Length: 157
Image (cartoon, rainbow, N blue to C red; front, side, top):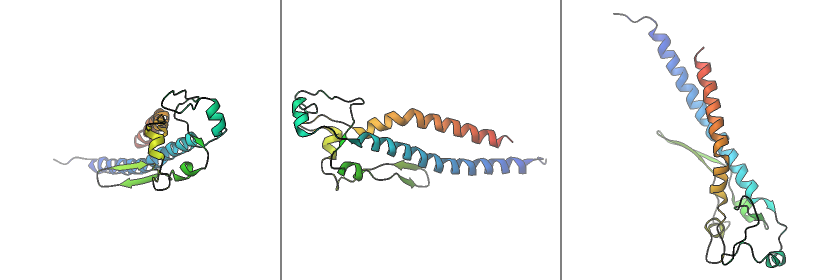
């Protein structure tokens, strides 16, 4: 028995596969850029707190008596700009089974980054990486849903 129209089905499957690969690359690039920009925003706040002002405030980032004056609480003021510059542009990695985008910080450029992210014996943690990711998660998820709907609508034609 011969199945008529099988070529059309195969063609549509290949078209869908190509569209998904293209979407995946675009989506990962776009979402990691959104994350990168949010991280930069959270560590790029121009500093108005001199050491004297922080002392007057009772050292709000001190672990002994934390009174973080910011919302979200993981904002990091830009003083020297070292941390801001150490945040590297988004990168993309692909293997046969996995694709991922990521933003990284060069610890060689900023020796104190772990202390800022996770705290230490004297300072509270301000994990701007995880906080920024949580902030953009719903936006990125909604963007993914909408762009996938567009692809699926295009395949129906």
